[in-house]
Length: 199
DNA sequence: GCAATGATTTACT
DNA sequence: GTAAATCATTGCC
Image (cartoon, rainbow, N blue to C red):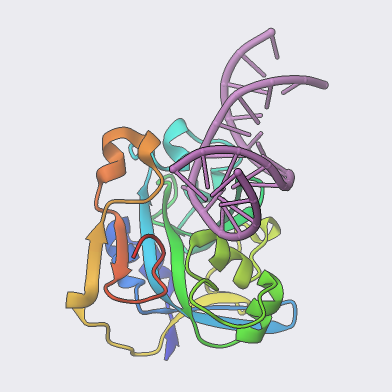
């Protein structure tokens, strides 16, 4: 059981990092509540050449965090209502990021229910990037938070995920990216019910 | 300064 | 299946 080090995030192969994050545990501790969940679905966004990535249009105020060194959080409001949680990877000047699309709730389910306004835990609690953002209490003000801080980090509890259960597929809802939309940069745990998308 | 739009979810027709 | 909710960032005037 240990916190993933900065060196894990600062490697250059964003797709590899996205794949290795599956099975790891996301931990947030703020608002007096601790919430944790096992990551079951991720998506990789690879820099300016990846048209699905926000950094494809160049360095702006919003994408500034992604250009920094890996190991920080990139939190972004989409469609006016959903907080998306991304992990910045690679080094300075390379805008790579991994989007956490779904997790399996472990601790702090009561806090998640309170934040999402649900009455009991079900499969929709954390299956989808917007729901993960809400359930874990992410806010735009936490943009840039270090992933080795006490309040936000990812741990490896030694859980060994069967490599045969890791599936790579085309990303979701990025059709506008043209050919890039079909890159196999989405990774998820085969058969896990918390994975978002069609069954 | 103003208008267009998107890494989504939910509720309704 | 389709539409509405809802706002920061962006690009153009």
